[in-house]
Image 1 (cartoon, rainbow, N blue to C red):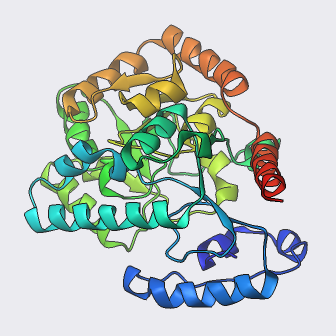
Image 2 (image 1 turned 120 degrees about the vertical axis):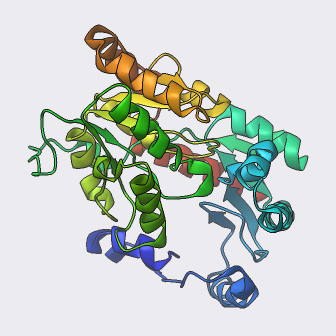
Length: 346
């Protein structure tokens, strides 16, 4: 069962190989109960031994044992959540209640959990008193398209004299993308750098409109560009045509950005948080995500240090081999967890 967004990403061949395939609409939280009834009918039809929810929480309790992926960083990074919503008391209270509700749903509806790092395993266990023996770690991977050999054609937007920084992230509050406006101000006015931040935000979205308005207020809107929403198949090309990859996140639970930057042989700059430290090791430039000047300075320093760039790229390639799984290995590890859990229930 998939939502329409995932359905569009899957090939006809992949879908035709699945015996029972359902597309379920994306519903707001107040319709989750009704949606749960629809899903319960599908479960009743097929009577599965195990239900796997890729990213929880599910809002219905399966009759079968349930493994759920966890990817809600602001739930367990409470201090970060409070910082993000510090200027809006109503939203701060709402987010606290919403995350409390989601935490209860996760604990009630999941028998087992799967996360991507040991850091998050410990955080989830501590935060929810979730039995650590029932939390599995499956390391993240990169999209299989990155393994396909092909030529990349550079579009006109990419110019060799411009430093292009790719921001492969959706616009969520914890992604901290607004900080890049101040970063751009320092890069343009103090460091006199010619550059462009390239995003993946829908061009007609309110988020992009607000970001560009903020950028105009600092006279750096000419340094911001968005590719808009792109299919997964095009991500390899976008990594290839940019110079650096940057992710100023305040909290993470799941990201493919790190391994995709490494396998693309690109310099990665990211936030100095426990999640990133565990996954990136010595293969990234770390900065204070709340300090725009520090971010700008780190960009300038690495831009003029080609020797350090080469070392980071080499470290990244080694890290892909030692820490991350290939797409096939990730699937096999997930499958083995499912099969072992099903076997233990018999």
